[in-house]
Length: 470
Image (tube, rainbow, N blue to C red; front, side, top):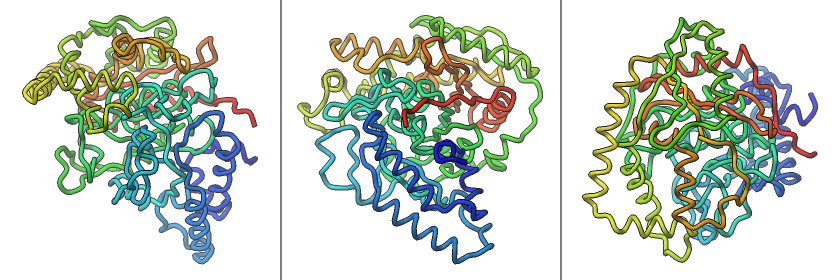
């Protein structure tokens, strides 16, 4: 296997090669660090590369492996496999910028986020922190003071946001998996833009410890990967209650990775193309939906058109979303859109915010009840295809916000309901960029989604990868 093929090898296979003694943690870490050093200036997927720290840890793991001889089966599941962490997630001793350049050299975080400790316990080696939009508030990754993050499929286009750096890193072959988060499509959108698998777990599946969630339960961390099995296995690592969590689910019966081998009977699937009150998906999105509907039917599932109106969600979600940017950062450090959102937020009272949360919860209850007649919902991820880097930069803040809402409209309602969702690539669009869809499950039904996604992947493997100039 040449070095480029190894860079794109799934994490589970990399872990197997390491346990078998066919690959060392240091060799794999050096491979990725060399690629990042040589190629990432084109994509700007990382804010911070922990080269010395990662190499030292990989060297220690390589020595530990050599000392074990053939006794490697009791190692953590991803021993020696590299991973990246989104820079909205605290890591002890390191700055957490939230896409704000002023925080690059400020006081580092005092503790790891709970999910960071979990990936360490699983044996991963952390390569660095990936780029995010400022405060994670936009579906493109172009924070002021940083170079814009670009899509390895075509650097003129965005990799999405706010987990744009995580998605670009995987697409460029700088890692096989990454930690991401989704408060309104921030896992699913980058997966769409970069041709990846992304899972937004059910509310309560992954802990926000120790800091908590500032968006009233809308946001959750989850995996980005190139394969369903890798995403499922990383979700196994991330899942689980940490004492004090405000939301939690019981541990599942069995692993999510096992679900990839689970046989499925015929499922009833509702297909939503019109996102009222915003509009309908564009031609590229329609093609992706049709690709997926045809594949589902060929596998014996029943797909039928379904309509739903998200109108009652729009204003409450805006109220909560704009409050999320008011983190006490001085206004002059914020970009144009976040300044505007901050001003709007400060016009609302605490009562307005609480009423918005109540409206979200009431409407979510109605939506989940309506969805319950289906096993799975098939929806677009974005209403139109991937935008170019800087395409909306010169727009006024209100116009930019309108554009964002129209683009990401299919995603935030599923953050509101707390249901699980998985983003899957379907095909390459005529412009050479990936297209894809999302599948929505019943509450806490990641097993069904993962089993279905694995079935689809087995029938139609996504073998495409970005052509990265070597």
